Length: 303
Image 1 (cartoon, rainbow, N blue to C red):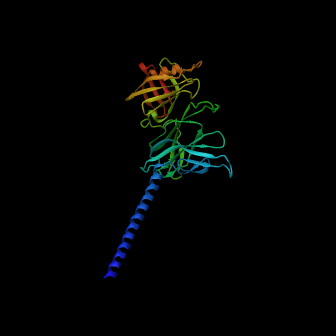
Image 2: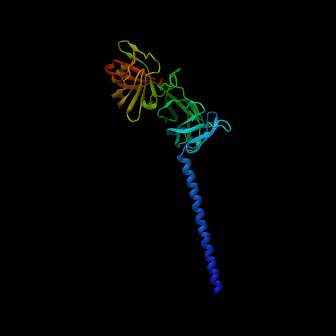
Image 3: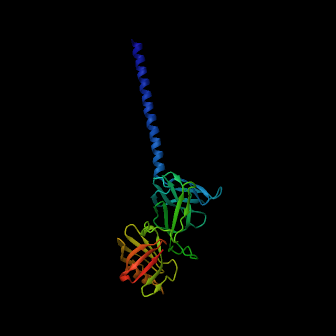
């Protein structure tokens, strides 16, 4: 009888140990999988092809010596400016963002990349050195990258003021972005165009008395609309900004403010007057934004 009891106790202990081991193993395995999935979904880490070489980001940064035993490092960082949308048409949300890379020189090179479904990295696209990034967006499968750069020949000590927009379409097979060329007849769809889709450049203003006003300095006058109903302007002298209101095809610019630097021969006041007199807007198949001035006195063309 004692032997039977002892065997029963030993058997019970063995069964209990097996159950505990199974629970521990189950919890450990699930916990391990959960952590890995969370890390992959919620970070921008991964292997990217930047500046002609593979770079692995960990915790948003990579530091690689340019040569063995070198004291300097090539530093690649996650910059931000995230834009979300479907880039490859699979119905799953993708995310595009900027990376910067600092080499042994003084440059800070900007690249745009994307993670498809939060997992698969695309090839990168070089934007420029020490640019001023603006908000990006993904609309109808097109990645719109907005930024300010310097005019040709300007020093890097000059603040970027030339507004640029890059329209990129992804090839799902090669994971490479191609540029969608703008500004030619039939390319743009006015039904899909929006005020905040790009940074607009002033091209010309035509008045009903046959007077035409052109910017004396090309690409100096730009207009950027933001989603919070504010706008910003670059000119041949100061920067300006304020608020705008849209009702149907009518638009009003209000509460305009400007920096106060004086520039001889500037067209800034003329440009500001055009905005205050703007009453309507429309888009064209040439990719243009047209402002109609009050009392049908003229029109302003942006591209």
